[in-house]
Amino acid sequence: MFKKLLAYASLLLLSLYSQAAMAMQELDFMQGSKIRARIARKELNRIEFGKTGILEVIGDDSKYKLLADKKASTVFLMPNLPAGEVLELAVINNFGQIADLALSIEDIEGQTIRIITDKVTGIIPKDDQEAALMLRNMIADRRGKYYVVDVKRKIESLKARGAQGIKIEQDKVYQFGNLIGARLKVTNLSSKKAVELKESDFEGLFDLSFATSIDSKVLLPKKTGFVWIVSKGDSL
Image 1 (cartoon, one colour):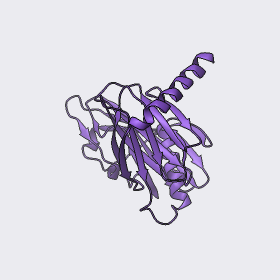
Image 2 (tube, helix red, strand yellow; image 1 turned 45 degrees about the horizontal axis):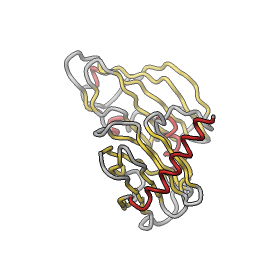
Image 3 (tube, one colour; image 1 turned 90 degrees about the horizontal axis):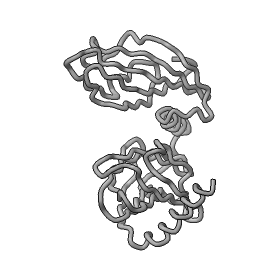
Image 4 (cartoon, helix red, strand yellow; image 1 turned 90 degrees about the vertical axis):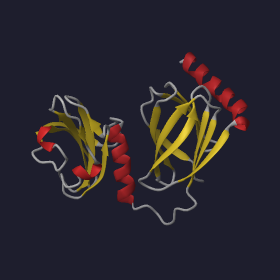
C-alpha cells in the first residue's frame, strides 16, 4: 500500500512540474469516431474532455499509469509501452459522452489532449450511451453492473469475405435493461490466407444490433480474434 501511495505521490509531483511545459493538442469530439493523438513515452500527459470533467477511463491498465485530478476534472497518464506502440482507451465524461482514443506513443515532451465538445449539440440518447458503455466494458472484460453468462454457441452464418474459412463461436452474453451484448471468438481456419473483417460484416448477424467492435481487422491464418456486438431486445 505504501509503495502505491508513493507512486501516486510521485506522479502528482511530476504533474505539477510538467503542466506548464505540456504541448497542447485540441481535438474535436464526434460520437462514434476515433480520436487519434500523440503522447509522450517518458513524461506525463494530460487529458481533458469537455467542461463537465472525466468520469471514467477504460482500458488495459497494465499498459499505463493514471492519476485523476478531481479539482481540475482531468487525468494525467503515463504509458507503460515503448515508442511506436498505440495505446487505446475509452474516456467517459460526466455528460455521458464516450471518446475512443488511439494514442501514438513517441519520444516527445508531455502532451495535453483537450477534447472539444462545444460543437456537439443536443443530448445523446440514453440507449446510445448505455450501448457504448456496455461495449467498452465488454472489450475490457469487466462485469460491472452487467449480468454475464458464459455460453458455447456456434454461429452458422456470416457475410464476411472469406467466411467459408472462418469459425465463429459465441462465448459470453451480457445483459443490462433492454440491451444484450455478445462476445464472439472468430478463428481463421485457413493455413495460408489472411481474412479482412469489418464491423459492417457483422451488422446483420443479430436483430437490432447497433454497436460492434473488432479487435483485429486482419485475421492471420490459424489465428483467433474477438468481436463484440451490442443489440437491443430480450435475447440474441
